[in-house]
Image (cartoon, rainbow, N blue to C red; front, side, top):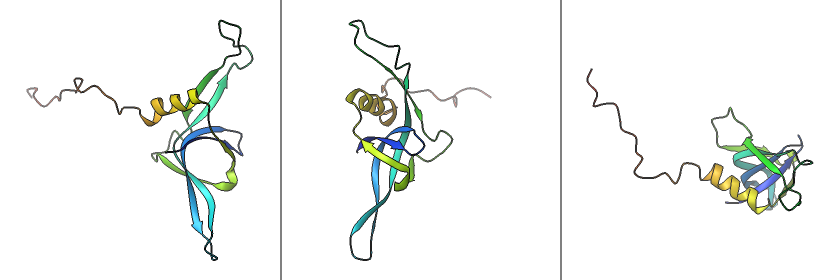
Length: 122
């Protein structure tokens, strides 16, 4: 898994588990033609000019929401010419994405199973 922050031509900052889409050329070389974004999310900075922590240091709030919210697909192909650059996200953002998106629902308590309604009388 490679979590990266992508800047797209549209100006969107998208965090995702990103894999290269590679083809072999006629001369046997590999060429990156795009990327697969798994569970991509748009990242927005909220009120970046007005925030500071209790020590007066600059702080910021981050909002993260699905990049393609109406798609049933979780792995979305993106052509290479739409990606301006890929960078390593700050650790707090990467942790927020892993815990809130990639690992969401994987760590449920075993004692909270829902009961079915099949035992109810007709």
